[in-house]
Image (cartoon, rainbow, N blue to C red; front, side):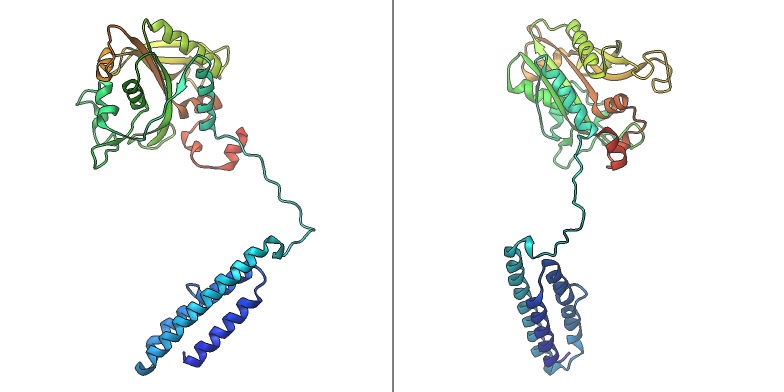
Length: 337
């Protein structure tokens, strides 16, 4: 393209910018001349075909074209922006745009429900980082060095030696290190494990854990708290069952089951004909954990419990696949609005 053609292109672009009446029209001019497939990139590409003695001058004129057109577009855009929406065409015959009311996501709803229920009996919310130290996530929770959860195949380890927390229990460690008893907190948050995603598992999930430490706390207190929690969350007819289990950070440890909310304990497909649905792990805080955080296990006792938020959402709302909670499908989410 010759110098005269470049100058003519510049003049045409400036004229189109001056007559642009809306920001949309101005954007069309910008794309036409400066866009990736616009006239300026074509001019720059054609410079290599010019005679060598004309190439430098044409390059300067092409750069001037880019600068002048860019400045003119910016100035005209400021003028149109200052003029406000009134310069945009408006059709008063079109129907109004109505915004549908939003609704809370099921995960957020469960977290809020649990927070509200626990607040009634004195629990406050504690939070902590997603990236944790090995000490807080494993060692201080009495996890043995050869425990499978420390394997890189089970946990997301970082180059710094830290990891993405596999549970919200490290928040309990941080809380106990920062204050003396009594402690009564819940720790909702996101957790990460190297699980293969399927209908009931995901590499990313949410947990809520509870911790109560004081003088004279017993397993009876734990059972009473879980019974109250079950009734408030699932309804007055729900029953609670405790089964012996093992966790490194509690002793004794139990699994907590709720009676099936679908069949009322009679047995159905949801509870696999058992009448019960496993909800939470719990137990009395192991004395070694108290030693790690500087509490005297001879003076203080406490209980801890925890469950997966997604699992409770699946049970409470009758979901068959955990993945629907993360697909952002409005057809599914609007059912619970």
